[in-house]
View 1 (cartoon, rainbow, N blue to C red):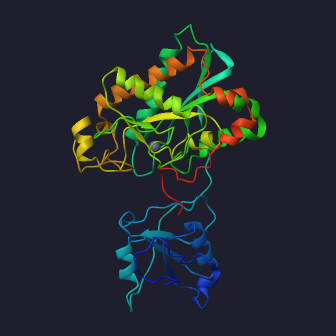
View 2: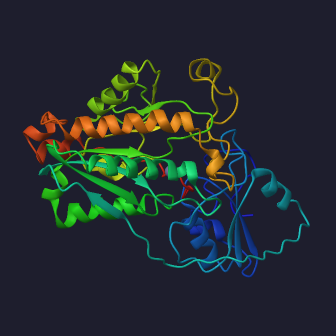
View 3: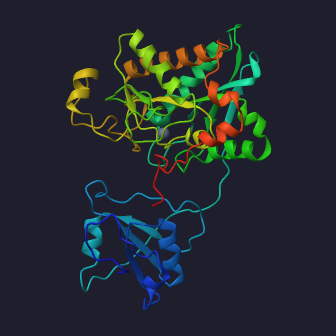
Length: 373
Ligand SMILES: [Zn+2]
């Protein structure tokens, strides 16, 4: 046991400091609790102290009471590191318990790809981007998360290729390694920041579609103006992009509601760098309320997507009605933005650069994949 009081807490610093391992008998297995620092820090400290494995159990608080599913972020730790539930941690901590760890895992650097396509028509200096991640978690095929978004923008791209009246260029992005921490989108945006900042400024808006066919769906629109107060207020233009979707749904007599604009998908790197962003979402592991069931149908008290990040996120895990409504909204937004000369982010555009970096926001949320902490 490494500096853990075996209480249900969100603020354990177990294993975060090397001093926690003073007197740790090398060759033993370190039992740690989640909290305060990254799993990678706890694991590295354990390895340095001579531990042969690190077992990290969950906080035990109501929102973190299941088996811990985390990520070390990148290869480099030389011992097995496993996540446990709080109860399993308490069980193992009992006096006289003997623990053996056997794992069969792979940890290595791999290559992955982003896929881009853009319209031949439209002003290359005024780009509208639409993106969706192509990868899934290892646990399942990822058809709702995120075959739904990927397929949607593919269809929109095919239809848009026929349009001759584009005023702005539309660039489609199918991101790699979103679930590992938005790696593909960060690679693209950071690459522009470093090598081609003008091309970054040319992007007037980025639209993100990550899960748009959830079986027990709600029509969520990214909260670009932070009216919920739970995320961040997006760069100039983000509120207008929210309005574009909300007004579309209104015109079809369909209800919608805001969802936290917290940067937990591929739009994160864009809003960190001052690009207006928006998008749609039909819900993941959170539970549908009675009110939402009344408005959208489906089942109250059940997750929007019970198969989120699981093997059952297969072709049967798509609500066709939701996908149809959401993909129409995607097509409407992309078409409206790209066929108009109006500026989406007029304030930001007026003083490119200075204004934009001032409006940039720091995203602190984790990708909706596995947490690092
Ligand atoms: Zn996703």
